[in-house]
Image 1 (cartoon, rainbow, N blue to C red):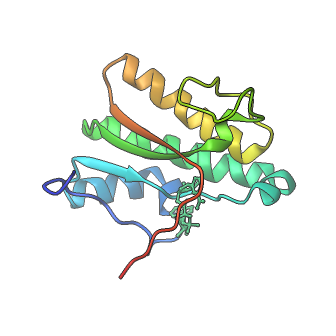
Image 2: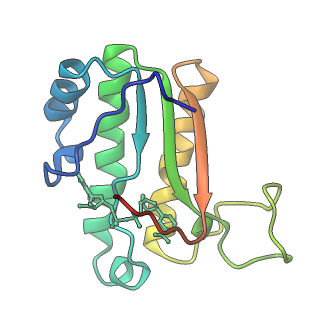
Length: 142
Ligand SMILES: NC(=O)c1ccc[n+]([C@@H]2O[C@H](COP(=O)([O-])OP(=O)(O)OC[C@H]3O[C@@H](n4cnc5c(N)ncnc54)[C@H](O)[C@@H]3O)[C@@H](O)[C@H]2O)c1
């Protein structure tokens, strides 16, 4: 889908996401025009034990990435959210119309908060976003 787009890979720079200036550097250096954002802490139980760590990494980190994108005029954004944003299901099977935001743990709340930031950016035409509310994924790098 994004064969001709350039995607920044930051995995080899631990916590790079949290640093606004590093985000600016990478996005500018690689002339990025589309960001696929999958970096996060993601353990539900750990998020209950260490909520501040999760809000800092997942919310502040994403905020710094989005702020850097905005600064550089990068609009295309794919965000790995989570089905945890739905919270306790009101009905099954859940679909995309299911109400979100009734999260039962800090991890889910961090994902929902970033969705809300991105939604507000969309309303101002600052980003065009594709949000993935993932349930379980397995990704292989060959
Ligand atoms: N695996 C699942 O079942 C699942 C389900 C729902 C949502 N998700 C979401 O999908 C995304 C990818 O999941 P995954 O299973 O590949 O996770 P993963 O833990 O394998 O990979 C996440 C990567 O992000 C990196 N990272 C975390 N914080 C960072 C930071 N501040 N700066 C730079 N790098 C940072 C980690 O080092 C790790 O390499 C995550 O956003 C996760 O919340 C995953």
